[in-house]
Image 1 (cartoon, each protein chain N blue to C red):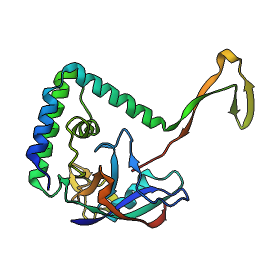
Image 2: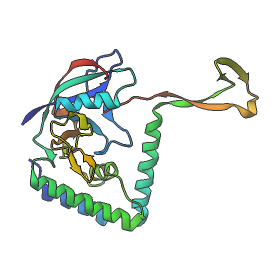
Image 3: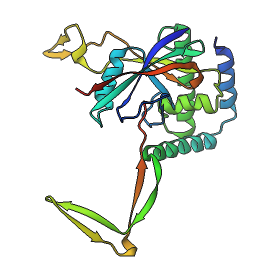
Image 4: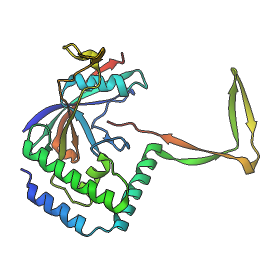
Length: 175
Length: 80
């Protein structure tokens, strides 16, 4: 199954011919190529995290989801992944007295668990910008609590051969 | 199509071979490598002088060899 996804980077004058792999410590799904499924999230990421040159670029690509672990829409995959995360995390805590990060756990799956057939992980969290919500915040005890009803879906790709037709879609000025 | 049983079996096998020492070593090594990655590409170089800017006035101070500063020439490639 091919799906269109988006990759956001700072605008630096050179057009990328391929996505950039993320090695950052806060790359929550491990060392991978990160893409957003919704253009709105790609733009939001550009405005929040790719501001250094005051412009960001969004690249469009297609990804083959056949061997992607889908923790968003596949309940079997989600519960399997959750089980493995907690199993390995507990092992680390009991053995080392240290809590691993999600990145470290995903890296462990690939490096020690030899999860070579997993070409990527589809993951969700919640959007961070309450201004883009189309509903009123929940009002409770004089507080306004934004309720993010939309999933922020991304995919962390481990094997770049599932990426195709990577091309720049647009350059935008940061808001 | 992913074979979840195979994935689990592979992971369980890896876990069965681990000891507290191997897991600790792996985790600390991972964290050290992650720290190095945050520094970006490049190397540490020694410099003999440093420019200080104070209230808009730039001054260059020469440092004695024993107090040479070491800075990194970073080519920090941001990604994701």
